[in-house]
Image (tube, rainbow, N blue to C red; front, side, top):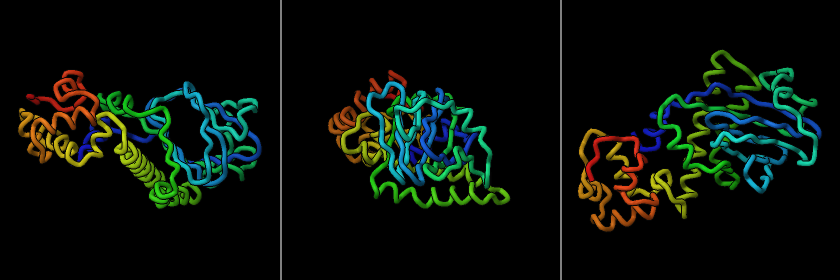
Length: 260
């Protein structure tokens, strides 16, 4: 199993909500704090995203995807100056073809998934992510389009087993969005999560996850990475933000039995 899959399996993600909503007219919806990660894709329309604690709002365009991994309260609004509507009014709106419509719909169409984690290491992943992971490059959005189109079909035209299909598609969107975030972070991000995008460092992390009971030495992991001990230690510090021994002492790795 590759390291990212290993980490996600340790977290034991589950979807307890997936679906779509279609808003019409001028509206500003306030959502409360949440556990886990929320994942949204704006299939059509434009609106603003404002997350508590983030100074600048984000302008969302048709096709944008975003994750909210820190659980902060947020709002989705056609105009940030509008009076806020409580999210419970929106989620209680009538459902038609698996889609909740507010104000008649037609202006902003979202598909969404909400993941909570039953594993004990959720904080390790979530603290490495920013309050908003925004996927907006056309090439990146195209990579998600297949899953999003299928998910939209499932909620618009429910079929037997459709809820399970939508759950699996939401998981695919989550993993793909994390991959894209890692690829972007490989151009300057620091942290163990970004280190997974470095093939050599990832090879060492993968070795640890493949055999966590083994008492790994710095020499062995450097060899797995195809590097000298000194070069490996320097690259590890550069990518992860701390030395290997500091990383382990701080509990940054989910594995045990590692001897540096």
